[in-house]
Length: 138
Image 1 (tube, rainbow, N blue to C red):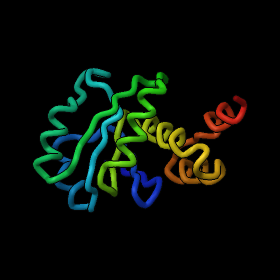
Image 2 (image 1 turned 90 degrees about the horizontal axis):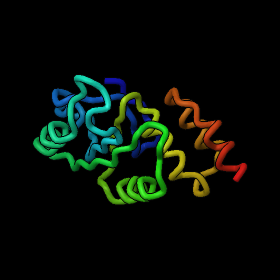
Image 3 (image 1 turned 135 degrees about the vertical axis):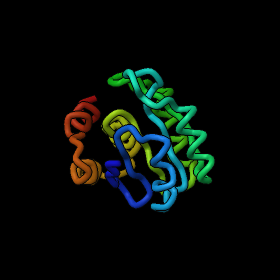
Image 4 (image 1 turned 90 degrees about the vertical axis):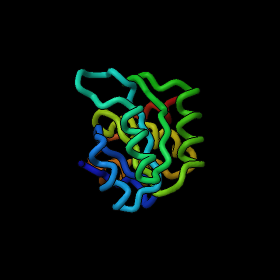
């Protein structure tokens, strides 16, 4: 697994698998959020299998599937609700972790200083500077 901590309560990861659940629970995570639609690529483990394994380890699990590059206002609202209500710390995953990071950055814009959003994302290996420039140009 390639866990990348964004905040004390929010970590992102590329695709996880069923056999990772014990390690995820053992690392202290209390919830898992999937931001990847099923069937995005061949061989990808589906959400139902991930959810079953997560629940077996006592983790709360939810899916807010986002097609790459197509974050709708409704999906962002759903993500915010999950982020606000699910037990922490939370692990969110998608294909590479980028969508999870972009969703987090969007959810924090206007609440957290943009410099801090950019710094936290960069420390985890993600560049949200273009997204923040777009948001500030609106």
